Length: 271
Image (cartoon, rainbow, N blue to C red; front, top):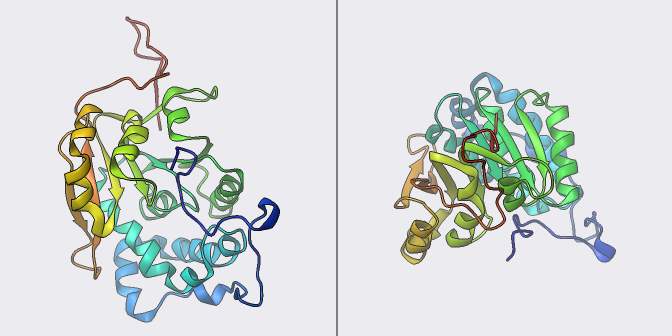
């Protein structure tokens, strides 16, 4: 996997076009996005008075997201438990008013979910592929989130270094879900984290094994000791598992623009 492979999805069809409905592929339906009754309590606890907004996003994922190949059709009926609630639980690890960069945002998981659940956050969705960023831009507009959410088309290293002429950016918190093994993820993501900020990587059952394998690499990149955090333990079964890494030292990535010695204004913090 390279930095271009920042998310996984259903993949393109023949000729590089997103896959569409076929006799074997069910036609997307908004009904697939309906909130199951047994999850209503958890959804209310995580989204509060923005639950209707979350429902609107769920519908877009189940319809446009599936049609564009950003979400597998078999995932549509599991949008709430497997995706929205799983991502929203991460909000408990994010300080009030924080800036957030979501690396390899794909269809907006977890970045858009966090922006919906937490209107106090400023979120940048980093995604290199055009069809995904098109969906993200349209979804941000349709949900009325443009005040707190922006979309950056490019790789994580480009966002960190300003290599494509936009940025560089940094944030209090960087999130990632289903992006890459922890060592590569830290290589791409830690340069986006302010000193003392944190990387939150949703990892599931692989979390502890990845920490054992990659803790040394993380330390060389300026990260502290990775820890496993369980989110939503009182409302989700199973809870969301993530790896949390605090950026303790600043290690300038290859290709980064060197700041002038007497100026701190050459790196813009994501707001």
